[in-house]
Length: 184
Picture (cartoon, rainbow, N blue to C red):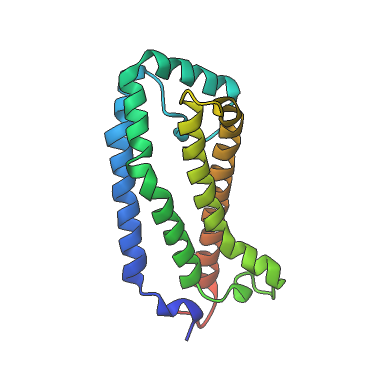
């Protein structure tokens, strides 16, 4: 019996479906209307990253457009409250479902490296929530807005980097399981 076989496939599929539903809610309920209202994308969607000048420009845009500010605020207090948790759980369950970590790469791994791989989904989740909190602070009028403005681009980069690494590792694990003889 494989270590991850205790996790039913339907649980992983259900989490994946929930992630897609919340992503659709975010996209069609907030990101598309925000782009329609302002002509600009939400900073959370900049896969290549952005710098502090983009954050400053977004602050100015939100100060001038109350509807866009309300949309962004509603997005952070709506789907963005649950999406990072759902995706973190999905990634973690995928890693668990793929079995014992020591056999992932065909040779024994140092125990700390093995545990660090299981932490990758949580790094994503924490950085996504950190990005959301930084956005709320940076686009508010509080005293910490300047600090959040400097932190926000780094949180976005960490979020996408950890997410990319999770997808690469998960893909590698699926391929390794598929190619290994005698595995289900």
